[in-house]
Image 1 (cartoon, rainbow, N blue to C red):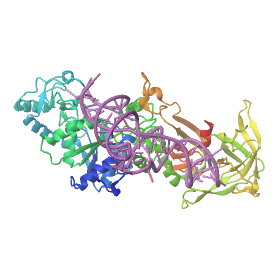
Image 2 (image 1 turned 90 degrees about the vertical axis):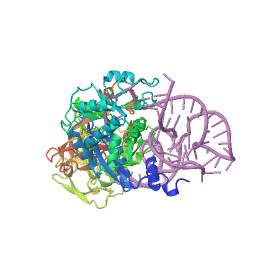
Image 3 (image 1 turned 30 degrees about the vertical axis):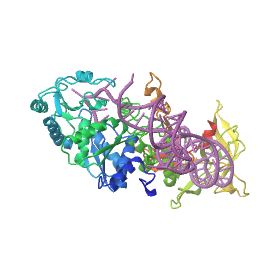
Image 4 (image 1 turned 60 degrees about the horizontal axis):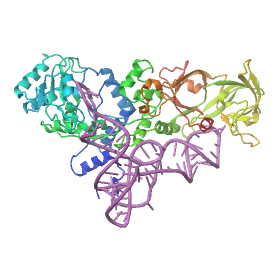
Length: 558
RNA sequence: UGGGGUAUGGUGCAACGGCAGCACGCCUGACUCUGGAUCAGGUAAUCUAGGUUCAAAUCCUGGUACCCCAGCCA
């Protein structure tokens, strides 16, 4: 029996680590999260972050944040800052902050070692020639005519490449492995290319830069990484990863393991396409609340806890899979229900006049801040003769099962009084513009003195102190559940949901909500969770819909 | 048509030769001053064909389907 009862139910990575620790393959665990600073982090990265930092923490090890900045053509400082910020926000601390570029000297030395050992050569072929001679999936490649160069000649040429003597694209350094390998990655992969670009950290020091396959394992070796965790598409690269490690003297031998990346319904995860959404102005920026970026989720009002919880709930395996956004939303609601301050906001106001309300009278009532949290206390809400209710809480001809307001029907105003609809006032075009109701003045607090049951309870806003607010209602950016199911000839832009953002300019919110500080989170009762946008002010409050409440009536209506 | 992977309810993950389980979703019902939350219940799965075994999701053999690989990207 390989495992006792206590070690059951581990995911495959935990199993590997547990075994390695038990068998003395390693004494402690070192992982790393290795983003390329060429874009913003998204929810897919969050899975990797939770795995790498989480595993290290779980086994008492360390996890480094390492920028894999080997391609100066694509990388920028703006991205490294956003990445650090996002990782911290998610709640993780790195043991060391590392950059692949810090290892360029060592990497270069190892390249020289490979050349000296006859295991790397300078190829003068063009990119096109190299591609053609690589062969195909079914046909082996051909050796380069430059493959047999002497170590001396290779050394000379490579040093001259490094000195900037040759133009970009004219020469590369390749590993000498096997042009007939079934694994295309082993067909003499390019390991250094000439790039006359300024690097965000090393400036103009280099004009040759290492390729990912060559560099990555060495970076792990330098940092003492024990378990180098990456996504499935690198499985074919593992023999190469091992080859580089085996063919020079490294301080430590790391191993690579692969897991299935996250796919999410209604969500695009491609860095390139996300960049395009930003640059074409389809969204307002990387942190548009509809973006699946970490900063997008943050601005949308998601919490780091909920994202971590989600990453835990989806688990980790090697089978391609598609997680449902509903699970993410569940994780968020689960937390916000316990923690979010409640408030009343009327998104689409309909005026209601309480006909028998004493003229000039203003009542003040207690309202719980959060019924799920007994320590949250209460606040005062005030009410007078003229109030507003939600337009959709009134139906002139109520459908079966509609237990809100309708002519002749009674309903309770949350925390306040029971009212009854007496009269419907419309404008010339037949639109309902105002309701005339009577109020049961003996029902203060919400309970009928005669004990009659009132099924419907509505949220409301008193005209005397409600504050006008802007509310952004966000939904899925795309209409397609599985974005890889796009029809032939169609583009992801063909699936944009025109209603992914609905702006409400004149919602009415109670005063506590208007006082919100940017990023404060609330439950707008009977609507959902909202957070104050980062440019919200008490004079002009702006709220973003984070996630709606579950709505069984609305579902029934659909 | 080469190589590398993966197949368990609608979705995601367990079960490591011994009663297929958990979560989300969905559907009932109870309760409710949020049609929320909560509570109780229900629905629903081992890709396929053989074989080994008292016993197979698990082991063996043969199929099938899907994903990845022909960047001087990572």
